[in-house]
Length: 101
Image (cartoon, rainbow, N blue to C red; front, side, top):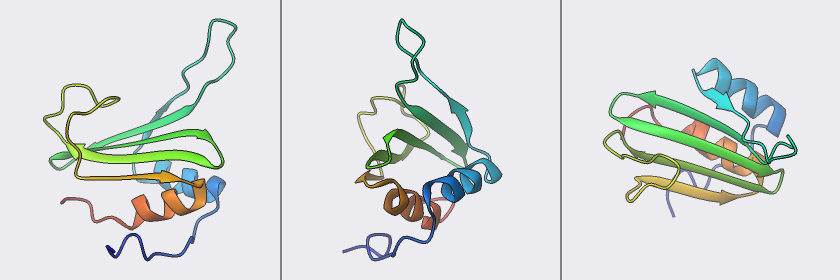
């Protein structure tokens, strides 16, 4: 078990999103043909990595850290760290990562 896995949720989703914005994440909101938002996606490029957080629902959040050399950040071939699960837990874990791997 890594230290990030052992971190108890510290952030609720709203606070976690605010912290992501404060750390420089840029957000997009992909929508379907009717204009309904499908997800909230945050991306931050820093050092030699890219962090992506996709919130599909409060209990369906995916966070990935990948090398900065990945061509498709939404479907990476390689990643350095990845979590999927309940929003507060996943946001707490990605926010606990050091800036570079």
